[in-house]
Image (cartoon, rainbow, N blue to C red; front, side, top):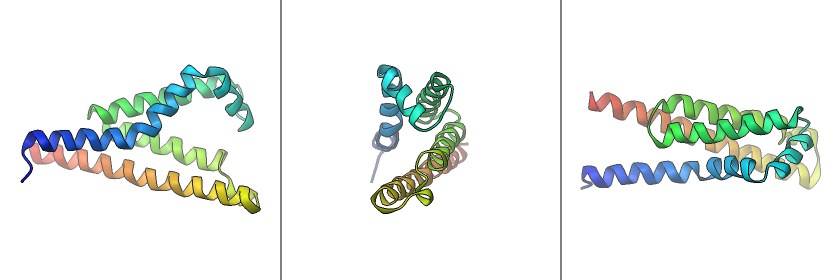
Length: 133
């Protein structure tokens, strides 16, 4: 049987594992600002500095909301929206052929799976709060 402390640690570990990709990407956009600007330009996003800063804010603050169990629905929704937009802006596999299309499809499928994990996290947080009340 899992006690309340083990349950809490399991929830935190689960959230950290879900958020590793978002936190690392958000920090990369801040630390390697010039490299991230090049990514924004390659995706056709202008002004590149605006989209880079907006992406970093969404990635880092969305992650913090989930990690600290505050407005998890908002954090999960922001990150899910970010991933969905990334599919339609960057991983447009339907516009390509060959190996590039396949790699883009894999990224799109991976993003879709993570969106499901974010939604599951928001639902679990909501249900846990309802059970406490």
